Image (cartoon, rainbow, N blue to C red; front, top):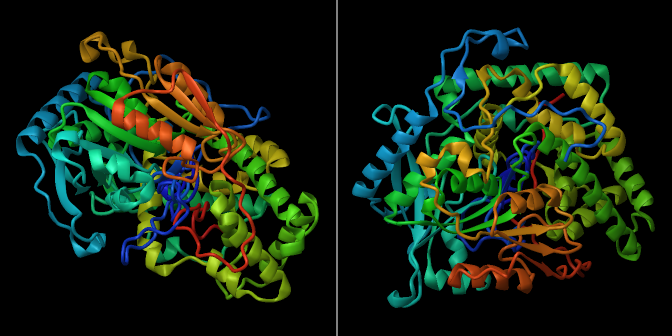
Length: 623
């Protein structure tokens, strides 16, 4: 799934968004204060049956299939497994992954021992924090370091990879400090290396006084053993097309592109590809906790970060101190990841309608139509023009769709998107080019994020292997939800041809699933869940699912709102609940509700674009 900037890709969610600048950043909607740091690119993820969505707290941003589609059968007895099994690669057979010979995966018991070994060693070594490398664009007093983790936890003495880590110390008196607060914005494929910069923001100052803000790049991301599946220039190819109801010929090209993309992943990443999974992300988090010298983990995860945070809480409940899950992925094993992405596409249709209704209410400003249907007609008019002649030679219908998908992630995009569309229809193409054209400077980061998103989601769970299933389910869904459905397919279709045996999703919240010897029958402390009722990247049903799976958890709901990523945004009620929980451990009971944030108002002059939002949801180069 796709996701957003502090909140990154979920890609599911954000489950299936492309992974560009949408990675989750806190929900502010304002640019980061960093001097020259480029905008993080998320969407993918999610997401997304994928949940790509990664963004820091809600300041900047911010991931359900329809009833008509058939879902893959729920995996029997979901239990944690080790890395997916490598199979013999077949360049032509779509069923290669299911028919090629495979070696037996190492047992989960071996991986559990490997985590314990790696965590002990990390605790002994710690992390040496120094001035950050220039490539991170992080200024003092932020410092950077590395933590070593096994590539394969079943073989902890074998090959190791290094994860990059960033930190800024708590600003308050030592007597009031509470240790490290680790943040993940989602994706899969998003980095939180810039998270320490948020400590200076007004919305985070109380928490930053008590906690060191710690960010890191998960395995495969940035400088943390980066994955790649194609040349960045090929990934960023533009213009490309994105029909809401593709022809049979277009679908054939889509399948060919997905297969070629998978071949690139295998060629460029090799056997290491099998070890980029949610389970290993959770295990890495346990090693990071130990390396930071924390007895128990305090963690905020957004979008996809909520999923692997919940997996961590299930595997290591005794190591949890406090956890905030912001914009929650549906963790039900039967949802991961194909159905999550279907649900996401349906939810984006509702948010797309929300934006069109808002534009219609401000017809006197934008002149795009006085009803939601007339606004849609204006959008379709622009889409037809771009199909004939891309704006600036780089904005085609796929770039248009990706840019306007951001309106589903973050209300901060509503006014810029409306202005750009209105200007384009008047003959001024520049605002649309600024909004939608890919940035060549971000191509490498975007390609990297997309590769991680693909590897994790394809490795995590079974996907339909038959193209006929994808075609049937999404053709039916697109009749109800044409806006995002086929772009989500393009994002996730490589999983149909993935040459690795998939894992089985963990039964999140079921401590017995990982065995009493693993958990020691400990009780998971209360955790805090945040969700907006109309979130498209991670639909609200996912928050309720995790809420039921984690006894003692507390769900804070922002009513009638849909921005993806809540912490640090303009809703003081939400921020107050988060601050209280992180500073005191107190939750607002089993559930609490906050009134919606103020609706955007058209501005006299165009405002700067926010750092987060969703970026290309298609595999670059899609025909």
